[in-house]
Length: 219
Image (cartoon, rainbow, N blue to C red; front, top):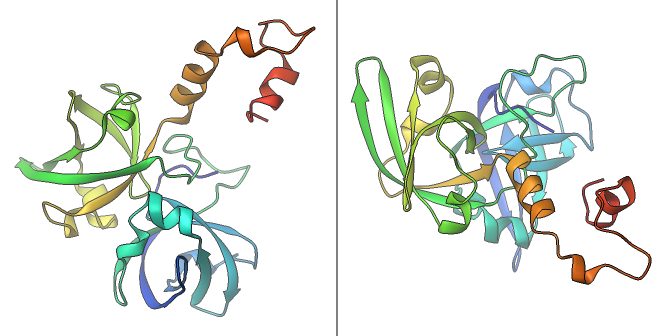
């Protein structure tokens, strides 16, 4: 689990591509302070598992499903990426609940400067826009941001200077693809509200119980 508060910008050192999957080696600094094999690292918002590491680089496998759902397949040697370690249980929750499981991608439409802030407009699918609400949270390339505007084809966020200077978002250009993760709470609520009672097995009720949550993948 992550918070969407980027710890540092890393660099893609190398990419080993397979038939449908790949292996990424990335370089960083801050996140290596307490990294171990098997740790989870969010790379542009995608939760990856550390399989190899040394002092300043680590390697992670990217499966075919991740490549289909995210923009990681478009990375090249030298690409800059946002990186965050999994949240420590005793840490501050500065962003929002981020799972690192990408819902899909969006396309940057425009950047518009307003005083010290920058408005970023992103087009995406109806499936993703369904869970985006004004003043709610959205994760863009791993960055926890507040939605300032939403309509039926796009949404907008406004970046403060600190976020702009400590993430990769403003290094991109119109037409670039970004990873999007909806607020997980909204997805859970939607799933439970539209649960089909007709699919209940004999002896079950429509009541929300611990068993029901477990059966439907919420535990």
